[in-house]
Length: 238
Image: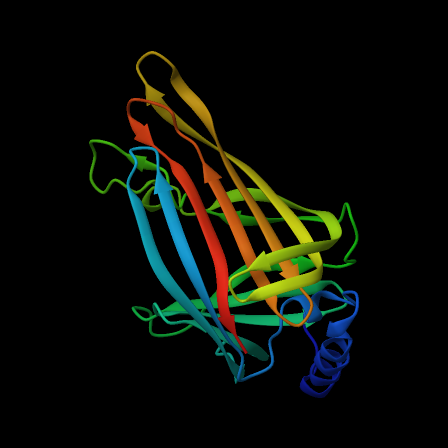
C-alpha cells in the first residue's frame, strides 16, 4: 500500500466504512480490509514496441491472521498467488508482510510499508519501494528489469481530494488521487549512456471501494530498452 488490537481495528473499520457514502474520513475507508471483499481489475500493458497485453487481476480480503513474527494483520490475496498482510492505525494503512506461493512463510517487511498515509490531505507524503513493471531489455535474458532492481524507492504524495472517477465498475466520487515518482538509473544505449528512467504511478482511492484506477508510466525511448504504459481499471467489486 498501522498496528492496532483486533477489537479497536474492527471498530475503526466499521466507523470508516459507515462514512463511505460521504467524504473520506480516514485511510481505512479508502482501502477496505474487512473479510469477504472482492475486486476484479482489467490490466492493460502497452509497450513502446506496440505490443499490448491484457490480463485480469482478482484481489480478495481473507480475514485476520496471526503472523509467525508475532501479532495479527489483515490478509489480502491476489489470484495470481501473492498474499499481503496489512494493519491500520492513526498513521494510515501499511503492509507488514508478504508471501508468494513459492514461499513457505510470510516475509516480514523491515519497516512499515504504507499504502495510504494519514492525514488524508493534499501534501501528505511517504516513501515505499517499487520495481519496474514495464521496462525491459531488448536483447538480454531475462528481459525484465525488475529481476535486477527489485526495490526502487518511490515518493508518494496525496495530490487531490474530491475527485470523480468513472470506471467499468461504475462512477465514484470523493476520491483521493495519489502520485508516485521514482527514478531508476540504467544504461540506455552507447550514445546516451546512463540515464535516469522515470517511473510514475497515479492511483485513485474511493470511499468504500478502495483502489479503482491506476496508471503507470515507464518510458524508455532507447535502443537497449523498451518501456510502456499500464492501466489498471476496476471492472467489478463487492
